[in-house]
Image (tube, rainbow, N blue to C red; front, side):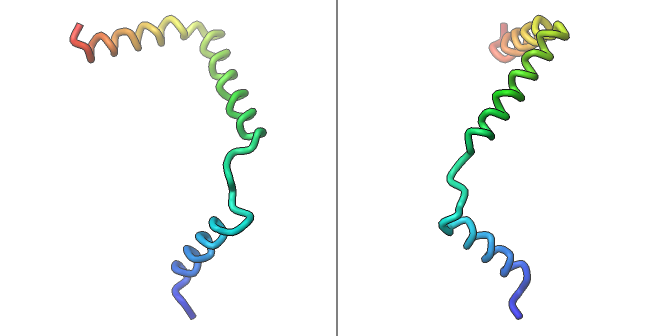
Length: 67
């Protein structure tokens, strides 16, 4: 019997190269990401964190650039 770890690796690489290999993200996955990002943006705006975040980013950029 072969090493179980090598067998698992071989099985996974065979699946990745086979005809059923995943070719990329589906439109449903992209829609999910868009909904997630929109939810995060809405939460930031609703909580009034946009001014605090932009100020923190401006301070960080200023500190990096030495100004």
